[in-house]
View 1 (cartoon, rainbow, N blue to C red):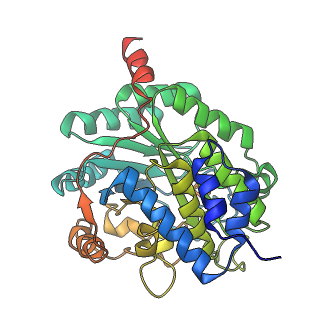
View 2 (view 1 turned 90 degrees about the vertical axis):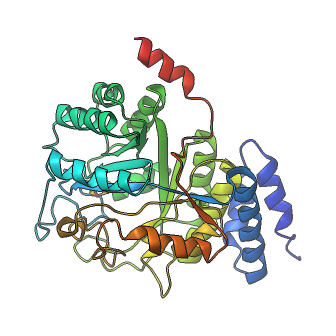
Length: 362
Ligand code: SF4
């Protein structure tokens, strides 16, 4: 029997409040070049309609590569004893943040592993200092913490929080995150939302045992949670991990997941991830920007430390001096008919005000 045109499931997915998993899986399984081209063009049209042609910038400062966890895909896992570990001082972080502000970028992402030595009060003071010195949105990406800690950082001025689920399949999650709890991950995401953070999450494509069905489940999860920001990464094997001999995740499949995520979430901010940019002959961030992404996240981690934030090998831009990105990114995006948007790029979901007002008046 002839396959239905891809337009049929795409239109159903686009119109549905929550897309039918069978339709999403059908689209993910299609390999035909014309089908893929139609999916990508559809997603790009949704991106243009809801997000415009601007590409938002978020400057990242990776302030510690210590981690208590042993995620199977990550080179920062605690048993990688070959990795030289570092913590930036508050002064080093503030210098990097000043550089971000001087480039007219309006969001800083403070990122680290789940660092047992991280003093929550130290980070709260740092957030408050950043907010007092600069008119910047502060995004945190420091993993799972108790509710009270999330509250402390929010009250110190943090605006946003990134916590990727990586996979919404509890079995796959357990297999890739020894000693961690899927339920606690969900609890953290619930807490962050209740505290009025703009919340980001996302998935990894290419995990061992992952199928089109489980990726369709991820897209359904992302559609239901309607996150403000969503990162779709590609698995890249790190030789110092248990998955070191696995194949690199499929780039085409990553782009399909990204495109479908744009279609089902419409106005979430979706970065063209550095992982995608680090694979293949060209810069994979360009095709990502053409199938739904609208954000780039250049690193402002000081050079001696940047190569040590070694989540996966072959990471791009580990030797460029911090702050040299603007020209490079400018030419990348103008080459595809887009432009860099230097606004804050807050959530477009329009549902945070109530939680924020409650927090401020408490
Ligand atoms: S993915 Fe995050 S939590 Fe897991 S080992 Fe790496 S830095 Fe730690």
